[in-house]
Image (tube, rainbow, N blue to C red; front, side, top):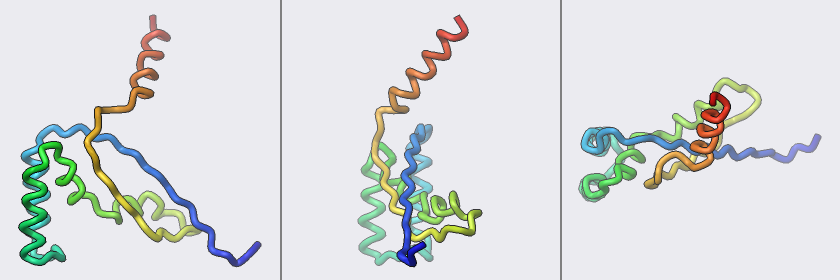
Amino acid sequence: MSDEPKFLRLTVELTVEVLDVDALQAAALAEIRHPDADLTAEERTEQAELVSSDETGASALQWLIEPDHVLQLVDHINEIEPREAVLGVEPSEGPSEDEDEEEHDHDHDHA
């Protein structure tokens, strides 16, 4: 065994359906305005405008996901040390076609 550090990168893809964009944006704006948020007044205004103007809700959702949430996926394993979580949120056409195809396969099984 070498003493060289070994790293593993986990990639997680999650598709969520936005049921209420206004509520999502309101929750994000509350985070941006929170006294503990590490933002200057200018940054708060800029981020609030970004969230409010993004009709997809992607900018809002980014504000509501903490990298720690992702790191907790591997928290219970003592043999690894979480180092970094990078998150991106972008508009999606919906669940990937692969998932739809699997569902159709199930339909054929029951026929």
